[in-house]
Image (cartoon, rainbow, N blue to C red; front, side, top):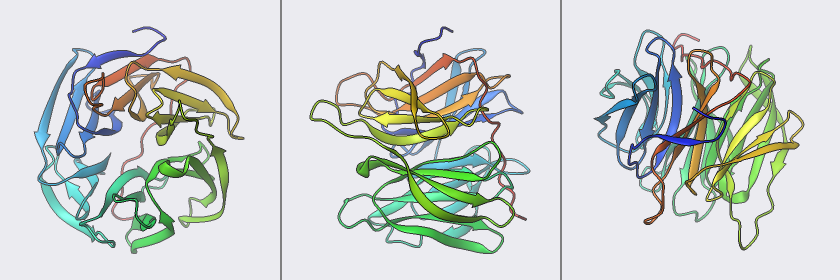
Length: 287
């Protein structure tokens, strides 16, 4: 693999999202939200497989003991390794006919954060939520499309984006309590008529830099911990959705994409990078 993005797996997703490295399997898991599939990709062989899911699946993360926690249209669920439902953890607190869970991330202690999408983009009715043994709690509201969830290496900063508003928010975060405070703009992107790239999913590397997928922008941006743009990496696909670090040394950046009306899109891309990403944390239902 080179230092530029290459297509590594023809997944053919309608809306590929939520890649996460499974270290115990040495595979990458990801989803097709509206295609209702859960994928596993083996970079050593280039082979992949998918299992059907019975409703829209926005986001996944490994769960302690095996399987996944997942944000579905109906709510947060525990799934077995093939995507079959095991137990609902929390119902969707919004109207599931217009809003579904969209993007998620496990915090450093094992709590699950998940945001929703207001699909009609009619009134900013989406929100960001935290789930732990205390139940589901709303962190913020008034969003259109919650995306870009990530944590700094020390766990003291929480990031998430509101994609249609071209903004990435930063919060002060307390990993001991799960409290997020002092929201401020971390990155604002100025769209133009020729470039409507906007912040979708994200990942953080070992230096604390934030890698953001620019949906309809065809590239990944890397920002330093102060929100300054450090580098941009182009892909062959325009609808870039989310990056994730993987591989045995966490130095491969995988990127999911969405289908794009006859253009290239919907497949999985990857690029070797010099700096490792943060290892994914498993959801802990007892935290």
